Image (tube, rainbow, N blue to C red):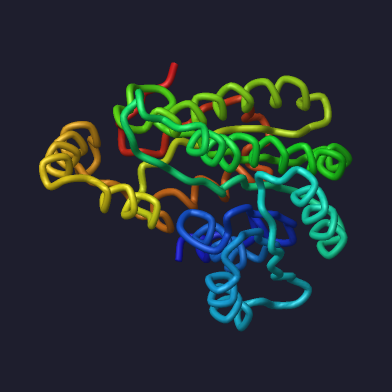
Length: 267
């Protein structure tokens, strides 16, 4: 695994990961444990969380901590309570990874209020609420990091995914704003734009027609300069996450950073 090559960078760090039971969140949780960090991951899927705990608990070395908390990130009261409890267990907080996210697909003219509430609730409100809940603990740290997850869909047109692109464009905006407001406390806030193959991507692809998949794969082959395909979360994305959580990135904040093989070039 990628984290095992440099265990000292995250040794002793205390991190909360939202959406940590699957996909990007699970990959981050796994490599943080391998890198020597203590992790509490939040999610709604208790069954998947149990599998993560079964896999990773044998790898935990004292004084490391690995714990799961059930929480709906779109519920402000619930996420504040969960993070307060998580910090109590961890004994402090060094980093927050807002990895919880959902995606829905429909034409722009058919976006429903229900869909908009769901996608904005988890992707946008969830990142805001978790960051607000973590702020009182991070501001006393003087060397803390928040990582949000944006998307190329929030930069470039994303036909069929209007609610998702709206949520991700907003993530980019709050990343810059929170970084500006909280920089005086030593809190770094950055957003990563990944193009990696996860369950969320597979679910998106399952809703595409054969023709749509052919068009999508042809686009990826042209746009991803490094290999023409989406990357692997553990190999291609998680090492960047660990760097952004580590003290090595102490002078990096307010950045929108693509980790996508070249699809998006931010300026």
